[in-house]
Every structure is written in C-alpha cells, then in structure tokens.
Image 1 (tube, rainbow, N blue to C red):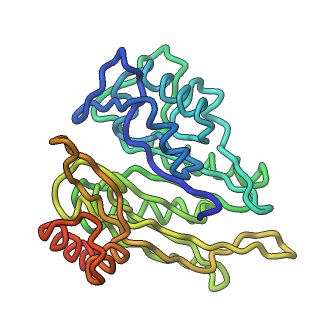
Image 2 (cartoon, one colour):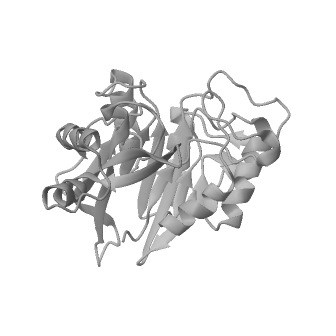
Length: 291
C-alpha cells in the first residue's frame, strides 16, 4: 500500500548461462525482477558486497533485467556517466532522490578499464552526490548504506559516525543493510523543526539463513508531508510491521514466504492456523519478542 516501496537486492541476475547459485557468489533467476515488481517494489538498490559476484557481465545483466521489469534502481551502473546522475522519482508532488553505496565487494575488484561502476562508501562522493541531488531539485534525499558488521545487533561507532556525516551533508533518511539482523532505528534531530531518521539495519526481508535473528525483520513505514510554502518534505511519523521468513516444505523441497508476525499469531490463536506447525508457532512468538 506504500506510495514508494524500496528494497535492497543482494544478488545478481546474471542469467541462466552463469548458473543459479547461493552463497558465496549469488546469482538468482532473472524472473525475480518481475516477481519483485509484481509484489509491489518500485525501487531496488544494487550497491552491496555481492554486486560483483558475476563480474562486469553480471552487473550489466542485472541492470538489463531490472530495466525490463520497469524497476527503478541505483548503486551499480553501466557507465561512469550514469553513476554521476542521482536516481529521481516523484511521489505526490515530492521530488525524491535515492542514492546507494556499499562498503566493499567481498574482495572482488572491478577491472581498471571497465566503464561499469559501483558506488563505494566514499564520504566525499556521498556528500558530492547529495549536493548534486539538492541542486537538481530534490525535496527529499534517501541514502542506502550497505555497512556495519554481520550479525551484530548494534551499530558500530564507524556506522554511527558515517550516518551522522551523511545526514549533516543533507540526506533526510538513511536505510542501512548488511548485518542481516535488526539494528536500531533512531531519529536524528539537526534542528527542532526537522526530524531525520537512521535505520542502521533492517535485517533480512527474505533469505534462506537460519536463526530467529536472521529471519526476523521489519517493513519500515515512513510518513512525509510537504510544507505548502517552502515545499520542503518533513518526516511526520515512522511505523513498522514486524515480519518473519517462514520456511516450509512443498513436495519435499524448501519454500519460503514472508509473513507479518502479528497477523500470523492472531490466526493461530483464533484457530485459523494457516499451516503453521507447533515449531513454527514457537518461532513466531520468539520473532515477535525479537522485533
């Protein structure tokens, strides 16, 4: 139901010839792009430590499939010229810029002479990109940062410092990912009049990882209004929906679905079980406490 739905795509879509694989070098079926569009996603960020898992061809192929599915995307680029242009979209009269960066590429390196580009966590580039976005009329700047330490439930000092620098440079919201577990969502007030927000890590929305912490996440809802006089966007409210990745078997093969935890528990407690085992119910209750 969101006006703008954003997610981080932490896999390549390199096509069947490259082979479909999981960890440590990801390549998912290209139909995933269409699936995500049909599920309601509008924008995907592609700057993360798995961006280069299938090399330059993987980046180009991912971009092509996202374009074919009519999904907006940013973070990886077919040319360095495209890298210089912030991604813009407009929602209800608000011009929104979306930027995305990653701390690294799992030790992989882009070839020196390739035109392909990946946004790295360079504070100077981030500040310059925010300035460009502002100069081109951005009323709201959202920055996705792939940073932090995996499986850590609290942000590192480096995360905190960088996030504050990015907000001070003009960003309004920071959407963090990489730890694969939930980290705090905090308001950051530069002035009394204007709230800014940092989500250090939203966790895994859907994944095949094991453990309550790695299968519990939130859908973060941010509510903005536009000042009728200044045309500035203001963050009015933040809310969230706790979700859990339910792993089950279909014809002896694993299947996955993302379920809203509260609604799932209500269905169990009112006798409308919806195919949860006793073990699933215990995990749902643990996930509810965790979220």
